[in-house]
Amino acid sequence: MINMDKRAVIKYPRSTEKSIRLMESNNVLVFVVDRKATKQDIKAAIEKEYKVHISAVNTHITKGEKRAYVKFAKESPAIDVATNLGLI
Image (cartoon, rainbow, N blue to C red; front, side):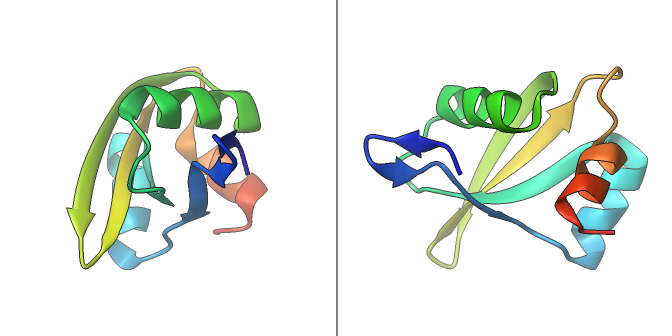
């Protein structure tokens, strides 16, 4: 994916029941990211990699991994990105 000082910012997207529900209802996708990545790093990496607009990034560290909840702008539906990633 996108590199931040020789390490990947975005590791992989999460495909769980909760993440699919968030995608359908709130236009949000969940990604597992590098623990040292900032919200600005995550936003820049996803916008550059998938050519979309992002309105917000929230992060959560749990069980040793950092998850980014990425809310897409209205002109960039999360379901389109998920389809391109092969999640659905």
